[in-house]
Length: 68
Image 1: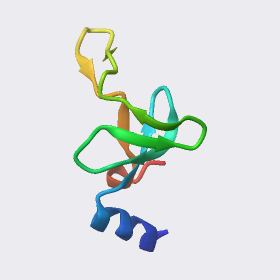
Image 2: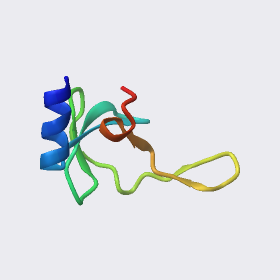
Image 3: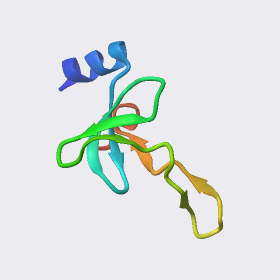
């Protein structure tokens, strides 16, 4: 698993978990990702808010956090 994570860090393609599309991979520098059940999705237009009204990204980077 460590080799795969090293490849993700070097290429910039990261494993992510999205609130709507589940697990997938995000391309570097743009908000486009590939998800197994949904294919390629652009998730820059997600209007996710917390209950306090603050903006929420809608996904977290599994590679950086180590939480899959």
